[in-house]
Length: 91
Image 1: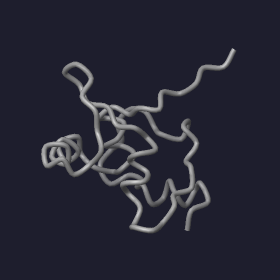
Image 2: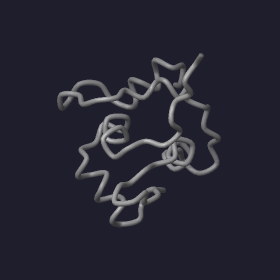
Image 3: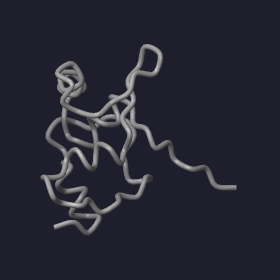
Image 4: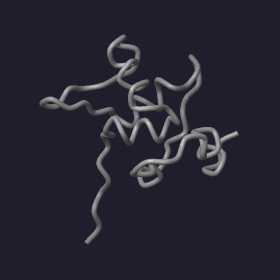
């Protein structure tokens, strides 16, 4: 039996994926600058909406496999979204 990954990211997961702090992610939410949903008292981010949001206008994003979001925390300065995208075949 396989378990499908959740298509929605938490603030912590999104912060790691975008190489931002959780405070920076919450700032984007406060300015309504990033697509998000409120779930109870928490926030969730649709993976495909964030991918589309992060691309320049007119660029169709390549799908990123759902299992490639790193769960947990990273030390500051280690890794980046750019490095993760390059590892997945993006230029």
